[in-house]
Amino acid sequence: MRDETKELILRATDITKRIVHIGFIPFIIYLGFTRSSPKPSLIRMISPLA
Image (cartoon, rainbow, N blue to C red; front, side, top):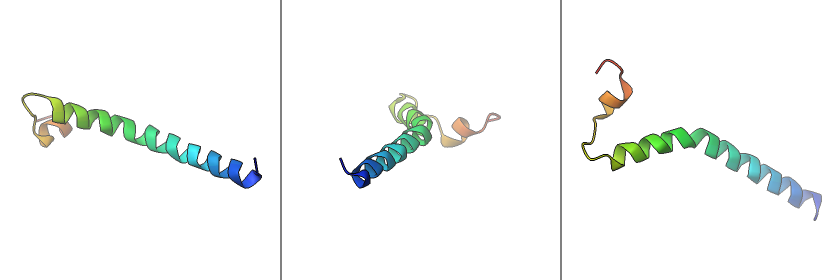
């Protein structure tokens, strides 16, 4: 393999890891918000006092 191809694969892998790392928790919250039977309001999910 050429060095340019290896660098491209490493860069794509790093970007994919970063996207998964940053987006995992918001994705789980989104799934819980959309799949629950009594849908909570967004304020109740964010604010601990509501």
